[in-house]
Length: 176
Image 1 (cartoon, rainbow, N blue to C red):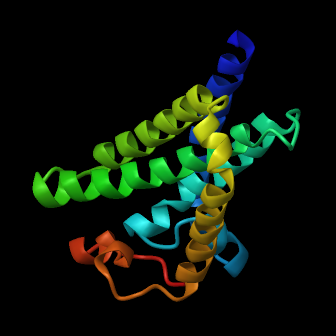
Image 2 (cartoon, rainbow, N blue to C red):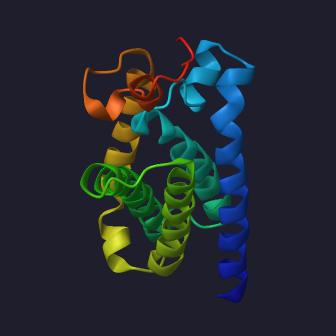
C-alpha cells in the first residue's frame, strides 16, 4: 500500500513536469503531430491536453504490472481523468466567470490541483467495486474525450470553451 502511494506521488510529479513541458511543445515544434499533444492556443480546451496525455501515460505505467482482468485499476484511472477535466473547466469558469479571478497563477494552480486530485482519487479508488463495475463505461468516455481533443485541435467549434483567451486579451497567438 505504501509502495503504491509512493508510485502515485512520483507519477504525479512527473505528470506535472510533462504537462508543463507540453505547454511549450507546439511553440518549439509547430506541426500537426505536436498540435495533437500540446496546446496550440490559449483556450481552456487546448490546455486539457496538458492533463490528458501525461495522466494517460502515467495510468498506463501505474497499471502495467497489474492483471488486466482487474478492471478496478483502470476504472479508477478513467474516473480520475474525467474528474480532473471537470475540475479545470468548472474551476476556470467559476473563478473567471463568476468570481472574476484570473491569471497565470490561477491557471497553474488549477492544473496542479486537478492532477493532484486525479492521482489521489485513482489511488483511493483502485480497489473499488464501483470503479471495476463502471470501467467499461468510463473507458468509453475517456476515449471519447481523447478523440474530441484530437478533433477539436483542428476543427474547434465556435464556443467560448474553445476560444483563445489570448485573443480576447489582445495577446499574440500561434496559428494552427
